[in-house]
Each structure stands twice: as C-alpha cells, then as structure tokens.
Image 1 (cartoon, rainbow, N blue to C red):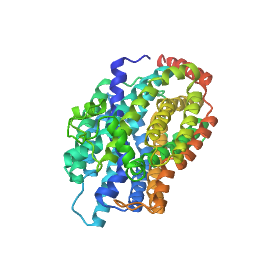
Image 2: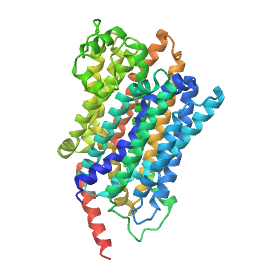
Image 3: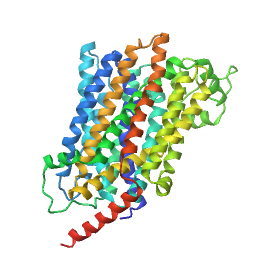
Image 4: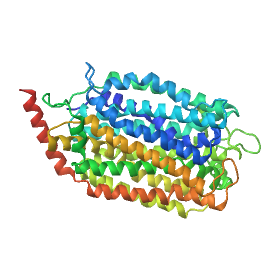
Amino acid sequence: MKLSFVEKAGYSLGDGAANLVFQTMILFQLNFYTDTLGITAAAAGTLLLVGRLWDAFFDPMMGVMADRTNTRWGKFRPWVLWTAVPWGVVMVLAYSTPNFSASGKLVYACLTNVLLMTLYSANNTPYSALTGVMTGDVVERTTLSSYRFVAAMIAQLMVGGFTLPLVAKFGQGNNAKGWQMTIGLWACICVVLFVITFLTTRERIQPDPKQKSSAKQDFGNLLKTGPWIAMFILTVAHFIVLAMRGGTLSYYFRYFLDNERLFGLLSSLGLTAPANGSVPGGVWHYLLSTFGLIVDVKRSNVSSVGFSLFNISSQFITVIGVLFSTFLTVRFGKKAVAIAGFSLATIFMALFILLPPDAVGTVFLLEYVRALAYAPTIPLIWAMFADVVDYAEWKTGRRTTGVIYSTILFGLKAGLSLGGAMAGWLLSGYGYRPNAVQTPGALQGIRMTISVYPAIFFLIVIVCLICYKIGKKLNLQIQDELAERRTRFATI
C-alpha cells in the first residue's frame, strides 16, 4: 500500500488548512478576546473552556457518524468537502468584533466559538481518521504523517509569523478590522486546501464486511485497550501544554522581555529604521518586506514583530526536525524516539524560567533547541494513533477507525480546553491586567505559564509513553497479521 507523492502532498494540505485555525486558537485567541474584543482574562478562559469542551464531547459523536457514513467517495473524505465552505464563513465570524455591550460580546464570542469548534470536529475527525485507511504500511503511515506535519508547520509559520503584521497592515490602527480581514484571508486559503485534499486522496482499508454496527461495543472495547488509554491521557496532557504555553507566549514578549534588547536584536537583523533614514538591510528585512508584511520596526511595535520573528524562525527549525522523523522511526521505533524527544523538550522548556528579561538572544536559541528536540515527535504521535486502531482490530476483530480517532480528538480538545482555560485563570490569578504595566507577580505568572507549568504536563506525557506497549517489534507483527486477515476476508 505505497502512496504516491501527489496523494501524500494532497493529504497534507488538509492539515495545513486546519492549522490556520488551530494555531490561531493556540497563539492568539485568548489575546484577541482580552485585548481586542474586550473580555476579561478570567471570562475569556472560561469561554475557551466551554467551547472546547463542547467540541471534545462532539468528537465521539462525529466518529460514530463517520464510521457509519457510506458514499462512493468513502466514509471520511466526504466530510472534508462538505464542511469546507461553512468552516471558512464561521472562521470570519469568530474573529469579528460586533458593536455589542460587554455581555452581548461575551454571548457572541461563546456562540461563534462553539460553532467554529463544531465545524472543526466535523472536518478534522474524519480527516485524521484518513491516516488509518489510506494505507496499512506502518512506515508509509509515518511518512504520510511527516508530509502532513510539514504542511502543518508551514501553516504554523504563516500564522505565527504573519498574523500580527497582517492585522496591523489591514487594520491601520483598527485591530478589529485587521483581525477580520486577516482571518478572512486564512479562511479563503482553508477552503481551497480542503477541496484539494478531497480530490487527491483515496480510502483503501475497509472493515470486515461481516462486522455489525454497535456503538456500545465499540466504546466498551476502548476501556480494555491499554495503548488507547495511554494515548488518550497523553493527548490530554500534550495539548494542555500547547494551549497553555502557546496562548501565553505573546504576553511574554509584550510584557516581560526587555524591549530595548529586543529592539537591538532586530536592529542587527536589519529590521529597524536607522536614524539617518536610509533603507535598512538584512536578510530578514528583505524577505519580510518583500511581501509588504513587516515595515521598519519602531519601539511601539517591537514586541509584536519580535514575536512574529520568534514564531517564523522556530517553525523553520521544527520543519527540519519533522523531516528526520521517518529516518529516526525506522532506526529506533516510534516509542523510543517519542520518549527521547519529549524528555529533551521538557528540560529545555522548563529552563525558560531561569532567563532574565534582557536574555533575548538566549530566549531565541533555547526555543530553537526545544523545537528541534520536540519536532520528530509531532508526526509520530499521529502515526501511533493509527497503530492503536490496528492494535484494537488485532485484539478484538473489529475495526473502529472513526471511533478511536474521535475519542483521541476528544482528549485533544479536552486538553486544549483545559490548557486555554488554565492559561486565562493563571494570568488572572497572578494579577494580569490587559494593556497595562504588569506587576512583578503578574510577570512571574506569565513566566511560569510558559515554562514550569507546561513542563509538568510533559512529564505526564513521558510516563504515558513508557506505559505504551506497542514497540517496533509488536507493530510489525500486527501489520503482517492484519494484512493476512484482510487478504483472507477479501477473497471470501
């Protein structure tokens, strides 16, 4: 079941599209709600919890529906197509700022966020399940996941590096307008990419035709499947980290890092306006100004440009690390590589708490090392989800791709919900106030929320990986035995 380059690349574009929403949620949604829409940090944290928890509970329902969808295009591909346009429309609505009262804005934000999360599940649950039905080859699945996450990293680079400059460019001082137009651009790209994914992919692995539909049995079997339990807990903890740390980094740049030192770093890259008014040089200035996205940095916008550069450069490093994932997996196996990557990433992330405000260069270097260690784990985790599907079929004789992926996505959304809410609650508890000079306590809260607190949850991830029983040898055994079974019932 080897896949062509076109199919792998086409499949990857779906995750690129999804990450235009996902990374915006991770990096900017909390900040958008507090600093543009005008919602308090505590209320915004609760709002994110409500929307993402609903999304989490909707995932298993979506998995059951996807497993029972039967069309000439397959079970999962049609959902990617059907949800594309509604997804784009609701994206724009979710980042619009209506002229409502404070309570009206809160209700509006809650409704649009819930609707966006519902469409995210209706699209991304079947999309993720495609990994388990496009091929049964474990190496091909890792390669497919690597393609997928290269596209995801490129999307993350676009969101992290260009969102704030685009908001400033489109808004011209009006952040509400800037956000709406920027998200409108991302939405148009999303729709096109989802259509390409639908057109270029194929579903090849089907459940045993004699398998009877039983949602109760499908969910009951999960609790007897050790690898699923380990991956579920791992996913919750993993995405708590991504939401908690990702949602707080912009505050770290805006309020904690020394702007003069950051300005000096950007000056060395040719991004600042020189005193004599001459045209600045430097490769970063050339690349970014070519697209008209970043103009000469002034002290008033140094934190947003610094944060954009931080995200862009970090994503480049992450893409490099993802490219090594397949090689490392073939050599050492998914489990061993994942344990090593998460362990190193935990250490490097925790070290951020030791950095003073003027250690701007060290902040960038430490992030690059963390990203390089963490990057190979990204495609591996999703390939391991497909292995759990195979393990469950191997043990029970029932293939429940949609149910397993949807429950793992339940854990993902629950982690996002808790991580985003915890970030808002922690900031509020430490005394954060929007658009104001922060107290030492608030600054300490920001530092802890990007370092020590997420590192604790990464330790939980490592424990789950140690308990995960599907190593390289068992993985290959399952692949061969399932291939023999499929050949047998295909000839009956």
